[in-house]
Length: 227
Image 1: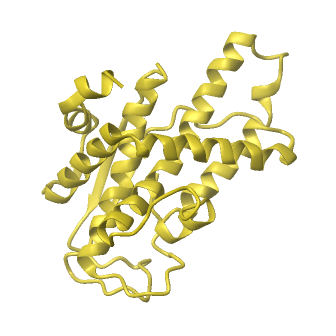
Image 2: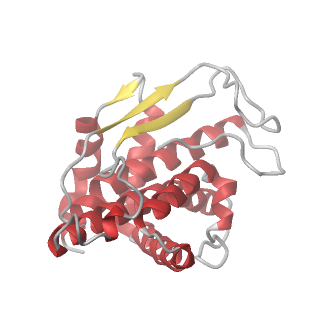
């Protein structure tokens, strides 16, 4: 899960603002991988956050002011489904009803976790700039402005595999987007994202392990369990 750096923004982004946006983007992905999957009683999956700091990115947006302390962060792993033949999920010849339900839950979780990354970045920007944040203002197309182009490309690739009929893709995508929006609208989930973003920003290592991330996210697990 990688935030794309070729954004469609037409304004200058301050170095520190961009760094914080990246941190919230990847914190959103990682938080969803752990907490959303756990919420849906899906099996744990390995992931880690890799950080490239103190280096000028070759693929950074040309309209951004990048300094030597600029960094990139990416969540590696974290996907329950890696690859399956096209529309296999819908085939009763291969899977029982229970197996189809399990694969469907895994597919949907992966797609929702991808959407939560740019949504988390968008919410951070809205709060930072004292702007409104809702599903009407920040819709699917708006995610391109928050490093979400590559995330959306992966979601569409999932849909091509998950649902054979392309006519159903848009309806499913709206459903998944609403679930992703609901996730980050939870105050407990948002606080978890904020904690992890702060941890990413303060981290001095190149890799934040899965165990470290889970420890940060589970700090207030009691509050989440009560929701």
